[in-house]
Image 1: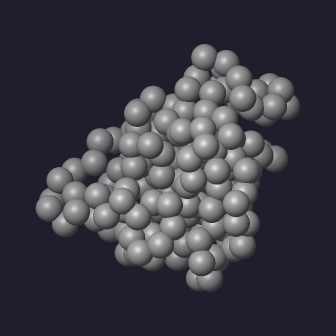
Image 2: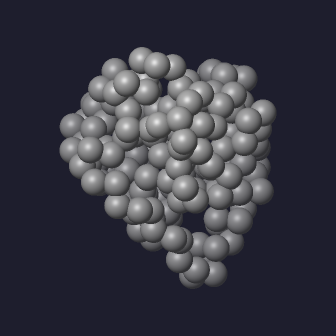
Amino acid sequence: MVMRVVCVGNRGSDLPTSVRSISPDSGSVRFDLTVGAAYAVYAMAARQGNLGLLVLNDHARPVWSHVELFQFADATLPAGWGFTTRDEEVFGIGALWGYRSLIQKPSHNAALMERERGAWKDFLADNEWAMREGPDQAKMRMLNDMFRSGRTFRKAPDMGPGAPVTGGGGSSGP
């Protein structure tokens, strides 16, 4: 089963005022998401009272995006998801719901955002279902092919300790 969302906004100005007031995103930020497109949800994170969704952006990179940028097409929690509380200094995440490695390995989220090869291996293995079902089949196959061929993934920009859970801005996310 795939938790699926549809993008309803891709700019900072599409976020509610309550979110914009505590987020560095401004009206000029454009997230690498396509309005009207469906995305699989790989995880959810609570950060300072906000909910972020881990999705593959339009460049097939996992990014944390504001839940307010989406409508749920299927909000069923996928089988195999776990939950943990955590105090992630870099991303400010306090609680996580998602796939095995994200829940069981405290360093996995930061490593995934940094495009570390081991984290990509875990992400692909834990989410191999997405190559067979859901809206991200082509993206996941491409990522799997890149990984298997030994190609590296472009690292995300350094967002620093005050970085938002969001991401998706620019071409590589947080």
